[in-house]
Amino acid sequence: MALSQEQLDFFAAQGYLKFGPLLEPKEIEALRAEYDEVFRQAVEGNSFRNLSLDDGGDAKQKAAATKQMLQICQMCERSLAFRKLLYDTRVLDAVQDLIGPNIMLFHDQALSKPARTGGAVSWHQDNGYWRCRPANLVSCWMTLDDADVANGAMQVIPGSHLKPVWHDKNEETNALLKIRDVDESKAVVVDLPAGGAMFHHCQTLHYTAPNTTDRPRRAFAIHFMTPGTRDRKGEPMRVDFHHPLLRASV
Ligand SMILES: O=C(O)CCC(=O)C(=O)O
Image (tube, rainbow, N blue to C red; front, side, top):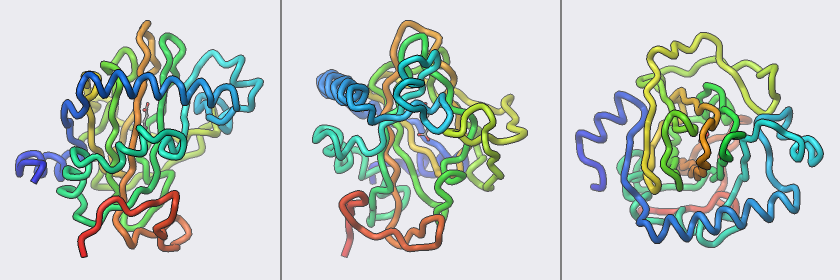
């Protein structure tokens, strides 16, 4: 067991769990360099989204954007270093304790809030976007920089994973959904050191604020599911190149 009974009970009741530090200083340094290089190439090739813009933004809008919540889906298909993280036993052992020994990748994503210009991600449950069934997916969100409320640490509403909520189309940006009536007085800021991580359930309400500091906030999230998970159309998710089986117990 990677997680103690106390940690498992906390996750079951609260829908999130602070974990780690996960990465060693040398790994953080190497991953930061790789992350920045992948983003450099993505900007050059216009192969990223700015979630602060309508529909992720076209190349011209992205170049002119004053708010930047940058997203690259499937880092694992652009970088071997990030692909290796999907199979990292430090992560998978904990995921196994949370969802069992058969683990598939739903997807991964890099989420970058540049210093000063980094934009917010509005309150949402991940499964408001995904609409997977059963709703038991778990994410590991790790940060390569110290993350606090000022540069866009994760904020969560404890216990919110117990009930799905309705998501509206966001009128400010089509790239993000929005939820009515979040009781922000219940929000908990999950500060993390560089190399730290947080697990959250796919129904846990979460939010990240704009980055108002001179420090970047570079995060990487891995979203895990169990075989047999059905997508929004009710189709079973198949193991394939984009959704590898990461661990199996036969
Ligand atoms: O990294 C962020 O700022 C937001 C991440 C997020 O909302 C997610 O992983 O679902």
